[in-house]
Image (cartoon, rainbow, N blue to C red; front, side, top):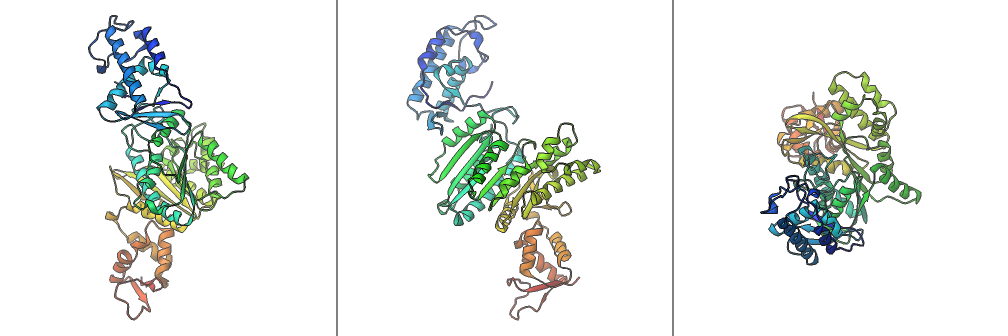
Length: 498
């Protein structure tokens, strides 16, 4: 038995006609249906095994369905809620209780016989399916859940900070999807909205928030718009769901700002395509030329490595890496992991060079202790953005076997989990950076933030103290009132003894 629709929708300028559906019911042929074995039909028999006629009992069921749905739409509230859509249309969502389930079943049966369309209604796409390339909705996978945890955590930190200084903020997703999964879990557009709506300091975020959700499939646009219609959005939140290809739509948005000589408001962009063929490095670079813009990009390097040398991939690879020939050198690389490291470093370096980003860090999703090859690249020109993203990474609790590993430097992979924190690699990195020369505590903090996977908060108690206790680190001209093994003064100098 197929899943039932969650809602029905009427287009802009809607005028429903249930009488037309009743007229069509009188001449209905059973062969029009494909779900005559559904338990919800009750007690009735099929006269012909091939299904050429509808029995009287079945017709009565459909008549009752039309009455029930018409009454629910005329007087929403018992099993169904109605919401206005941005284009002037309307959507009626079925509730999760018994009344809602009965109405959903009625809409489902009417849809099977083409009667729902006769009323002027369309069912919202059904929940179900496992393929994101075929279904309107699909099942949430654990690696995606990990991405979403990070996305929410970062926006919860980003929004209040940026709202202190800016009157308008833009949040954009280039491949939005329908906003929800087949199991009911929130998709990334609704997570981006909920990061504000459920924020514990929401009252302090006074900037206007403008959301752009770009989606290439009409059915997913319809579903996302219907989901957003159910939200109680305050006046300062503006949402636009755009039907179109990411490359075209986002490119046009940048063109309009550039041609008008305007300043793009501080923007956070989440770029999470299916596959890799549509995330253009050049387009990302144009966007990031504006001040105070940041990007989080998902790149499935495992799949990129599988297809990089296949015929017909030239255009996709050139767009992805922003280079005509740089990616072709992968053919000269040996083992698979070395090839993936090469592609990773090329993408990272192109974000630095093509997009002119000062800070770029990458994070690999580790599944059950095994590297997945799926990487999130974060880019920003602002130290605070870098700090908050790294703090978000370290604060995301592992779930379902999904963990994050800082993969910016393949020679310094660090599992980002506080419970497993090992600062020995950080101590070694500091020793390589400063040798035995004196350095200030604040210089070590800056180096730790910009050039390692660690946080400045990992330095004093977890790195300096054990190093000094072991005799590997010593203070240089410490303040006379300094308590042993403390480093509160950022200007205090230290040096490694060996």
